[in-house]
Image (cartoon, rainbow, N blue to C red; front, side):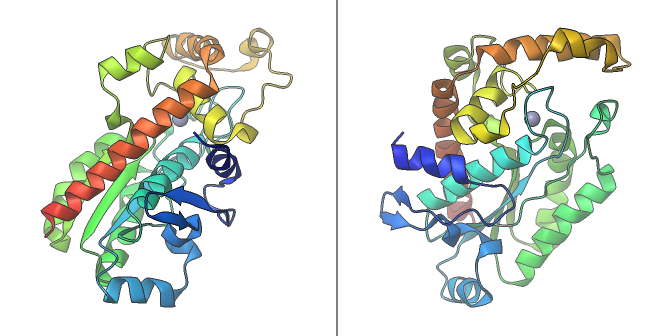
Length: 276
Ligand SMILES: [Zn+2]
């Protein structure tokens, strides 16, 4: 990965306006802002859709939830938005990224303080309405790109109904669908991806947004008695993930991000082809 791209990775903020730098793509230099719906003007969006240039929109879904002692709670939203944006840049100007859904379905983490959760119905209603808005404006192909485990099944169970309702081409995938067993074994010493705040997610954050990793004063053994995790199995897993996080590296994160970006770009390319 080039230095400028790494710098760009470090600068991105999932739902903020930090996307002002120049990123290289195959067709030259494109300001990464240009693929973000929420950073575009109505004029830019209208012209892209009316000219037929804009063919698909990615809707990222993430979470705001505990990521063990060292990762920021926005981790999943930031990760999936980054993959979506990089994939859209590869397909520029055919693809844009909609405003990410930054809170997901996380009732299973509510005994860890700080986690926000939506009820399944609320989450699905938000995703549905974002897609419906896009359809109203003439978008014909939508990829809901997910970055949080708790959202997977509800999205999978809803997408066929939305396809019928909207009469458009719509699919839902998690960005880690890019990883098969062979890839995971090649890059992850723990043999686990995506996992939770462990080797994979920490590697991803090291490569993409190291400013969201906070090892300062983290002492898992000290914190453990006060964590208040009710389910013993979950407590055991929490500790295991904290250990596996130490296996993380920037190089692993870069390799895994590249694979996810290429896979996502391919998925959207296929969606556009199918929608023709
Ligand atoms: Zn996560």
